[in-house]
Each structure stands twice: as C-alpha cells, then as structure tokens.
Image 1 (tube, rainbow, N blue to C red):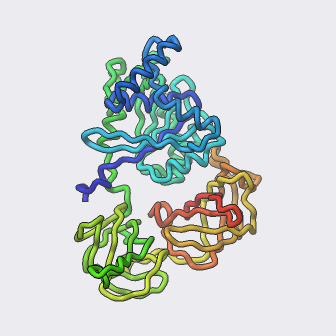
Image 2 (image 1 turned 180 degrees about the vertical axis):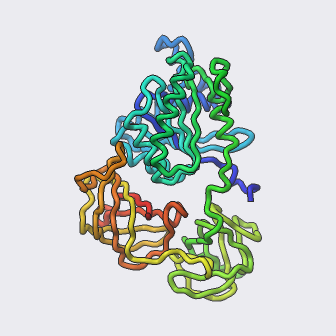
Image 3 (image 1 turned 45 degrees about the vertical axis):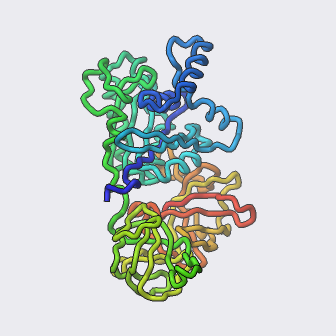
Length: 418
C-alpha cells in the first residue's frame, strides 16, 4: 500500500502562543531544506539588514501572510508546501490567539501531526493547554512539543527536562497516542534540520528527521470499510453507454474486486466489479484514496449513500452525541435548527440538549453552558433522518460533521461524534 503517493504526504499543523517563534520555525524548515528561491532569500536578507538584524530573520518568509491575516483579509489558515527526497509536506499554519481557536480546528482537522511550540523561558501557558486539548480532541495521532528558544536559556538541560515533565503530566489527561519532545532554537537552527552541537545531552531525533520518518501509514482506519458516495458517474457516451460508477473517497478499510458490499441506507447488497483510480483499473483501494467503484448489480445509489462491509456496519441513529467547536459570532441556540453535513449526506437537525461547555484551560466542565464563538462543548443533536457513522476516535472521516446556518449558509460549527 505504501507505494501510492497518498502515503508519501505528511500533513502537519503548527500551533503556539504569540511570539513563540512559529514563523521563524517554519522559515527555518524552508530555508534549511533549500525550499527558498534566490530572490526570496535576497528580499529577506535586505529586509533583515534594514531592521538591523545581525542575521537573516527567517520569520519574514511568513510574515507577509500573517500581516494580511491580521488585517482581516480572508487568509484564515495559511497552507505551505515543501518536499524532501523522502516525503512531501503540507503545513497548516494557524494563528495562536484564543479568538482563532476555530482556525486551528480547521487547519488541524486533516493533520497527521501537530507541532506545538513552547517558549523555554515561559514554559506551559494557557495557549499550550488549549492547543494540546484541541489536538487531542481532533484525534491527531502524533504530537511534537518543540521547546523553542533554548539559546535564550543557555541550552540548559534542566530547563528542558522540567518543561517536558510538566507537559507529560498535563498530556496524561488527554488522548494522544504518540508524544515527542525536542529542544530547539528556530532562530539558530538547533535540532530543526541539523543536529545541535550545543545540546550534546539531547540524544533524540531532529524535528526534520522525525517529520521525514514518522510512520503514518497506520493512522488511517484500514479495518472498517466505509465508502461515502459523492457522485454517480454516467459518461453517457457510446463507448461507455452502460458504465455506472460511484465516485468518492475511501473513508476506511480496503475495498477489493469481488468483495461483498452493502449499500446504506437502503440495505441492498452486491459485490465489487471494478475499481478505477484516475484512468487506471486497480485491484484495491484504501483510505484516503479517491476512486470510482462499479458493482455487479444494478442498484439505485445516489450521493450521500455509503458502501460498507455487510458484516461490519457503522452505527445508525438520529440522535448524535457530539463535541462541537463553535465558529459563529451568534451563540449556539438550544432548540435551534441547523443543516447538518456528514460525509456526502445532508440533513436537517435540531439541538436537543447542550450537555456542557468545556473550559479548555482546566479541562473541567464550565458552569455556564452557553457556547459562543471559539467555545467547545458537548451537544446532543437530533437529525431528521438516520445517519450512519463511527465514533470520531475510530474514524475521523465518518465520525465528523459540520453544522450550517440555513439562513446565511455559513458553516457555524464542526463536530466530533463521541
């Protein structure tokens, strides 16, 4: 399976408090992996010299987008792309302020890995706890805590060890499978791409080595077969006059030619006749590949239906228990009616109950259950039609949904089914 391009791509998100060096870290990754054009580097060098910087200020590589974002221009999450001989990368660069919690949720929702920066001088802050909780809530499999600005604490091992212990204690309350801790200086380049000679006491990997080598093939659910149909392919040409395929993205499991499948919600059964990825016929497809599947039998299937294994069905219910991150300026309305989108299926729903609002800093249930913009809370929804879903912890694709305001068509919340 690892031969496909999907498996060579690592999506990661960066998060941290204000002025913790996130822009410098991203700049350092791009600079030290030779991803910057000569004219870009010259422009940064000139700008650094104007500021009187003794060295190249790599944060300037990303500050342009950050300035646009602070002016309210539409860049909410800045995506950056780079590659090394071992792997391709997409970075979701999200702002760190509390009022941008929703932006972090957006950027982190598809990430394999989260880098959370901690200033070595300040240690754990409220933002550190918030970002760690969101990474856990979103089911990000790998979390890397980069203890940054080690150059400002004289590369002191005791400082790093103390912060690591505090982070381990806090993270023990969360559900994160894989934790790593790396002492770095993004400004000086220590342990980012090149190993630091100034911290011989640290024997672990550099950040770049970890990003290139961390195992992500097992992050997707390859057990529960789930194929939400997004589009019915009917070319209607003479050469393809009897072709009827079902296009979508595999949300879980492995689908092979000849496998029996059941269609939800109808319940009819058939078996897989063929699988196309692009223009090529293949023997199997798996998460997260996009494919077109044809069946042996003529079955009425439309967008929003799901192909599954007959002996491994998802949960089916109209009552959906979710953790919601609220995106909208208008608070969540108990009893409010919204449009719900789950995989390719759309339905109307009503908010039956607001169970509690989460205090992200203490991980306690807040006394005031009102859920406002950037808040996260547990809510019971009642859907107009049954949904077919898995718990988010088991499948991030079939366990997530969004709510839409029917009047304004704005996305008002993202939900993780618990």
